[in-house]
Image 1 (tube, rainbow over the protein chains, first blue to last red):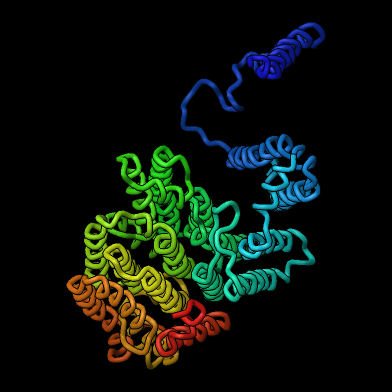
Image 2 (cartoon, chains in turn purple, orange; image 1 turned 90 degrees about the vertical axis):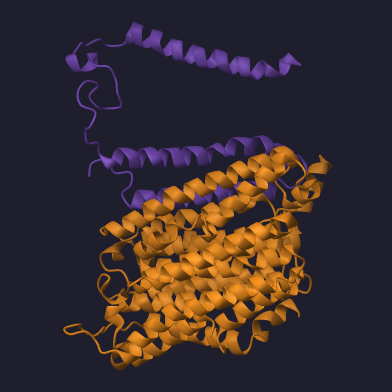
Length: 124
Length: 484
């Protein structure tokens, strides 16, 4: 019964290897220049020390919200992919595929709209 | 694997596509409208895309209405499409079109966001249709949010005006609160019945305390949106602060959608012992709405309070049904009341939108003085709408009230019905005050006459006038497809 958790174990191993591996690789091969800015703790682009009432560009939130929106919407593709194989075997794969294409098209129109309206421009 | 095929075939049937076609049409039209906005050569076609989408959706909805056999429950029993829900759907589409017509030319500095406005206006009726058809609490919630989220944005659409932003924020916060109540109630019902489907919940019954608390919270969430006491406080501020065409959609469309769900889907689930309590809530709502309206000097705010009073009146259908009136008569009464209110309310708020010209100039009672001499047509149409709101015979508002009260009388609640009629008399007081100001008083010194004239608003007013008179004089036109 526990063997069904095997893939998750593999996933955890891959994730760990990826994270640790990246640190090791950059430690081994990375160029090391020390500067004051690099020594700062990373805090989403804002100063870690000082008053908390600082102004942030509204663009930060816009991009963050857009990211979450598309991120969560694309998440639906994963359960779809799992379920689609069964439907393909049952002979209705074409319809099920057309449905997900429609879903992606909706996302596509949304992305095109955001892009055209300048929602992704950072330098305004 | 063949059971998957069976499942697929049992969900995606021909009647399912017939039932959901109007919502899908609205969704496709919404995307087309967005594309029209970002593809420069297509920009002039935006208005056509908006109206075309509503027309196509209305035709598809009419197909449900006149189908030889109504689709009934589709999509695994989660969505209901029958003549009643189809009529509701048609009224939402008409209401959105009318409010949109009043909105054309209403905005000035927000005109750069015209497409966003129209897209939100298309999303709202899709949510309303989903709400009325929802035979499953989750489907209803999706519809509710599909309606509410556009309305939050629309309420705050005049971004540079503090009252509009206030309306949007208030509506959003309180709407989120009501959604939370609804969801918590749904969770409790799921705990008790093991399903979110309304038929499964009805089968399980409300014997357990969990289920009883669940249905109470779900009903509270619905009452919140329907502006029933004690959840009516947000209405005057939100209705007054929102752009007036949006108020028209909110006051008529949202109310119709939420009452549609209440009457078509939720009412049969309520325990009969709740009838006295709901009747008391309805009476208190009528009291607060009518006496609140009586002291207003701003006509838009007065109409907002009158909207609360109307919600109270309509709610009387529920205790009538619970006390044993004919279910078909109860849902017919609610449907008729809401369609009549759709034309009346949209017309009244819409004319205010037309008169508003700049700022709040022509929404106060003082500025309407002497309107009959300056703009006789507007004054006459406004009078008709106010009389219909007040329930004067030969208007749709009268027959709507009559149907509601007759449901109560049929259930043996004559006393409550009389109380309701008395409140209608109080209501006449403030409606007549506006008519008196328009016809019998002189315009204030130095008050410029409203000069606005817009084709869209004129057409919408004509439709509303015809609608009010048709529902008042020829009710069979509306009730015919339902069968008497």
